[in-house]
Length: 393
Image (tube, rainbow, N blue to C red; front, side, top):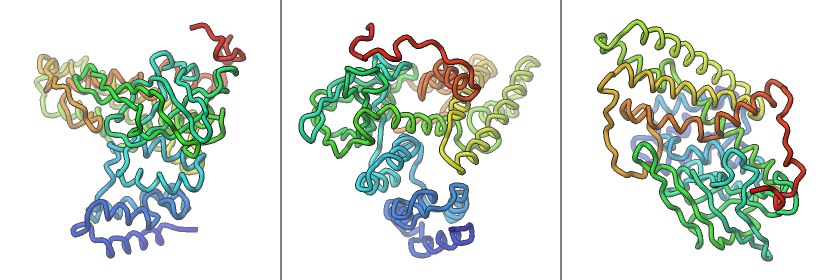
């Protein structure tokens, strides 16, 4: 089994052969992938070495110390955190070899075509249809809240392939080429003034059957792998002490004593402690993840992430007083990623409102925690055994 010393040796060999200072960034990332140092727990030939996931930090530390480029994970987060683990679990060998390398190097950006105007919290009620014609599927429908669709080459897509069975059973999972005819991306301007989200219209889009992930009708089970990984990616990200929003508020508190009040001090202390608890819980979750697959615990972390971001950003606006009401730029832009720490307090306050919606609404995640983590009785579901086509709309 690969150990830490061997990984250090392999990493140093990579650095010797491809010195970061004189090697093109993309060439270095491709070489890192081919050396099995992209995600060490993936199989050999797919960016990994079959090593324990916990040893990824050994590689990352060596590369960071050498000034090696990263793959801009914020820009390609959907591919890294959601598409890749799903492809690894359900993809054919041909699919894995086609998609994973350019996904990890950032050559191909991914987006997620799941939510719809009438199927957000109740995702299984989705109505986008995929009808088989020979070796192709013809897809028609509309998706919404699609981050990075304006940048993406590929999308992970779920569509209804059988309306005559209950809603969870008639869904199939596909990989959609965002450059294909019939795919239209329209920006959705948000409360921040920007449009990182999009709505996507699919009109007669033809997807070859060899871009299907999992069995026909098994898309809901495949989607659970995506969603579990999404929640871990959002709520369980690694942070240093005072990383993220709490760091911005703490910095202002230290540098601007004239803004302090006793009441704000008490709130800041409470949120600082809660941010630390969330940080350590995220570390524990990542350690559990290193030993297996993510479970529903990621839902709890994502819940905490949303609540903390909203409360911390609200405190920051109050702390800054009139300054907190300012906003840097309402220009309509289509950014490549969300930047919570690189913008001002107004942006953080407005953008954090979306945290309790994206990646699963807080209301739905509370149900998941209650039923799958705490083992409480499930809510009554009268539509569980009703064919999708017979559901009331």
